[in-house]
Length: 101
Image (cartoon, rainbow, N blue to C red; front, side, top):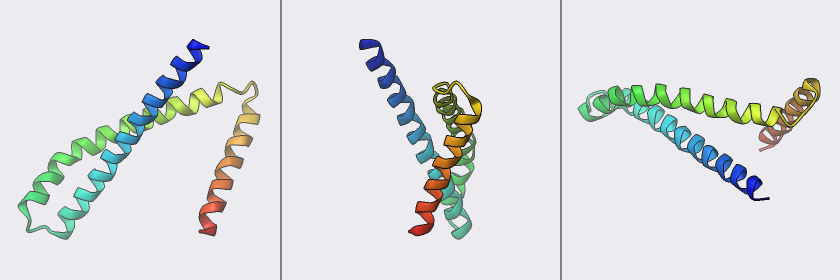
C-alpha cells in the first residue's frame, strides 16, 4: 500500500513539472508575440532573444515528460491494439466535446 502511495506521489510531481514547462512554453509564445507587436520596444526584443532558449528547452522537456506518461499508460495493457483503440477513442471523445463548445 505504501509503495502505491509513493508511486502516485512521484507521478503527481512529474505531472506538475509538465505543467510548469507548459507555462514556460506559453511565456515563450507571449514574449514572441509582444516582440512582433511592439518591435520598437527594446525590452520586448531583448526578452524574446532570451526566451528563445527557454522555449526550445521547455518544449523538449515537456515532450520527454509527456512520453513518459504515455509509455506508463501503455504498460497497463497487454495488447497494443487494445491500447491504441482506447487511446483513439479517448482522443475522439475529447475532440467531440471541444467541437460542441
